[in-house]
Figure 1: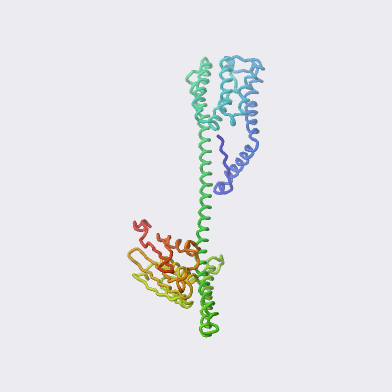
Figure 2: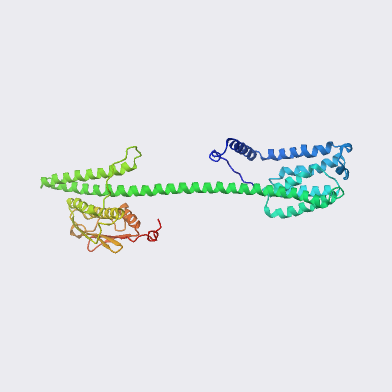
Length: 431
């Protein structure tokens, strides 16, 4: 198992210059190794050959140590063959660590069974380290058992010079060190890989939250723009039609309609400026005005009445003390319902509007009588535009619902219910 870890400039920001430089050098070496892995493996083989194999080939009988005299010195060709068998498999120590260890262990046992001692036996420790670091951990116990058997053979072979227990202690210590270093490096790489994966996952989650927040804000702005523009344009269109009709028979009424159109347009323009001022990224803070609430429904009804419909508005319960968020929701639902009545039922309809608070429930009911003469309301009752969707989204913020459908006769009824009960977390007093 090989884990690639990338060190970025952010990772070295808090390091000392020397450690940061070493980390960057290590990063470059890892990148070069990933591009040409055979270079490092070949370099390991060459270094071991120069440091451990070449001295055995150059040593003669006159300069051999006393402990070396206890063992057989094979011909140069035989020694070279054993060294190749020990060192050459290290070329596959990372790609196939189990195979490399098995081949080296087999050559190692053959060598010691022949009574030959070579410095190149260090390759067995390198193979054990590589198996621990890159191989499957389930193969490690078998490798350790084979290693223990081979080291026991070595300890018996040198028993005439060194105590068996001293030899076993030294040899087992080196083997345990190789395994411990391999496990330490493997665990460290796994930890770094886990941290990288967690950082990448957190970055993805952060981007997803950002996109979700952006989409939510777009939906909110679109809903506000629809409520502002749709309502005021519906009133202005109705007033314009009424002014055109009255221009020949009642010029004063036509002039009044034009004045109302101007007032409605200025109000719509002011609300749009406020909305766009919040969206603009400018140094100057936009001029804020309080959001409309239940107290502004009377003025809303007056504007709708000016376009023709007869509106009867009543309230029940203590609705003026509701928080601003609930009041804005009520205002927007009433605004959308009255706008729909004006657009679909016409200027001669009669509307009954009721906003009542009953315990933890706030109910809104808007019922119109439909177009004059009992004709069908324009638009299919099964068609849901942005207005009805927006009303339902606003009601859902307070655990409520909106139901719209045909009322008595040719009229239309919109009923909304909001849940004013506090959330469970708020009841528990947890901040």
